[in-house]
Length: 257
Image (cartoon, rainbow, N blue to C red; front, top):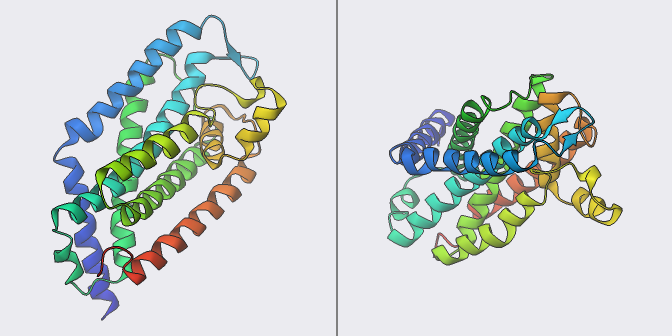
């Protein structure tokens, strides 16, 4: 099978996956943006006058990058996981299995589409919320790097979850009991320096913390840990998850009898 054929197959599958979520963008894009705005209105209104972060940054401005990154991560995971489990349950996955697409093409298409959805939702959240309190743009490189890497990690994790799951309930459990708690406890709504030492240590064991902290660094130029440390940890997580997903796809785990 030629490299050109593999590339064309990956491109076609990628286009199909992007079109899948874009056709229902009111649900897949607009709804998450509205949810993030509700978080901002509730928490920002309640805590703006009482909390300063990093000494001088208002709470609403601090919260906005966290909500943007949370939306990126959750929607990237939702895209790849929901697409794969839906195809498995409805039976239309067989049409992909009869094609000569390599596991690399599957990976690139599913994860690439998940990254696109995550970034589109994140951009939507930023555009809507930035009017409340512009957070600044100190080091844009970190914004781009952590947004793309974070979406890539979650898209890959969603692919692994979709391969493992056999029904929607399992995907929902994965999201509700793993993704959501790790996201909410990663510093979206607070700086970990406000926590007791024990919980600071727990936060440092959460890879989601490094994605959000590094992303926030791009807006304010300050962060709880070095952005290079965060980048190294996030990069290792992506390589590990990508290796796992590629191996599962190569074996046809739970998609080939």
